Image 1 (cartoon, one colour):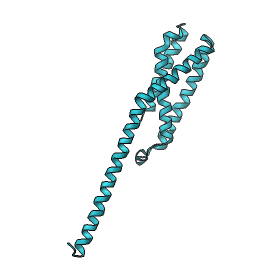
Image 2 (cartoon, helix red, strand yellow; image 1 turned 135 degrees about the horizontal axis):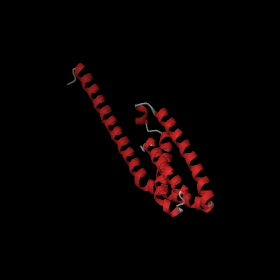
Image 3 (cartoon, helix red, strand yellow; image 1 turned 90 degrees about the vertical axis):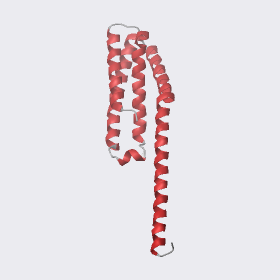
Image 4 (cartoon, helix red, strand yellow; image 1 turned 135 degrees about the vertical axis):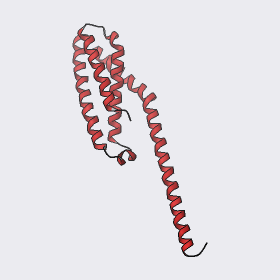
Length: 158
């Protein structure tokens, strides 16, 4: 799963860089790298929140699912505050159309992350689920075979 602590750290770093660039009067185009980094980090947080809302059964075995959900929620709230502050700064200094452009950039980052990172993460989860399922089924068959074998031996059938 995407680590929410890393994602909020990247988002905060990018956010502070954007604020610094705005304060020094840089053009919105000069901030493209920082805005892209911020958009990817926010996308990672959204994905982490989605995963925390519907945890896999093997994640629940180790416990801590609720703690992870609360952690993701807190980071998401911090990201929402950053988004609002960023919207205010950009709308004030560059106009509302610049904010719309940033929203389009963020949507593009989400699409790219979905295609690249999240698809691989979901494939990995499917492989884990199938592996556990196959191992559990094999164990159950072996256990039943062993039980039948020992019942047969105790009854003198073989």
